[in-house]
Length: 173
Length: 173
Image 1 (cartoon, each protein chain N blue to C red):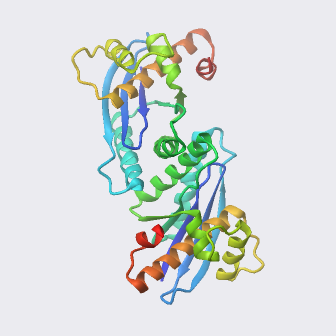
Image 2: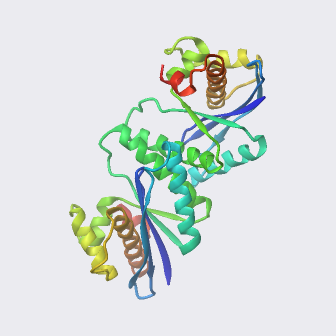
Image 3: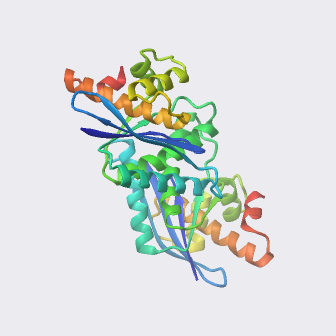
């Protein structure tokens, strides 16, 4: 069994999702939450909250793999910059724990879960519920996205194991 | 006496500068270096190196104040994103130590050191040498920029003390 932490970084909210993958590739829901960062006094303090929250999750759930969304082309340099800060803080926290991070583009996540790179967000959420058997659970959008990237990593790792193609190769497709 | 750490963040090299400010406002050079991040295996590992280097500097030099450059409008969303990652990792590291960070725009740093917001980079370097009495020392560009932001913070704090105007107000001018 492998435990995967998925992260959907953002400077207002950062989604966290934890799943377990059995040897047969079956995925089980473990935990999800959205770290709320807007309560912080200023922007640097938001990044501090992000790291504190992430470290708490790493301590509590002890994932072996970490997967994170890459950034879609942001609307503006300003929003790219803010998102970059959040992602940088998250990546640094994970890397400092000597955990390897796999990065997946939103298009790859959609392709992996829905079978179409241009799927809508609610289709992705629907598949997250279905694959993790969470029919009635209220899923916060950022937490659902974090579970989606964790599921993508589970699928990619399984495909890589089965075919001998590296995950890096699969991600490039 | 107050010890100030200046940071010039970048995803290839991050400049670090440490100065002491005496009660009369006189500044003394303590330390500077450029953290070289390109040796890392991948981009997340670079951010790990950045944080490790920064934590080493914080441990060794124990600054009371931290000052960091804000980002000039980056040429592209991609470069804004990379710079944002580096800055986010640096800010998160500092904030986790409960150190307060002051942010200064490049224009403000130039204005503070050279007296002109549109000064050239080598003029800023020249003033860094002059103010810190480092005539012969070879200064790496990123390290010099880090010393420049530390000096700016020293000047701004002294002006704020003298006039009762907050540093936040001065930064906005």
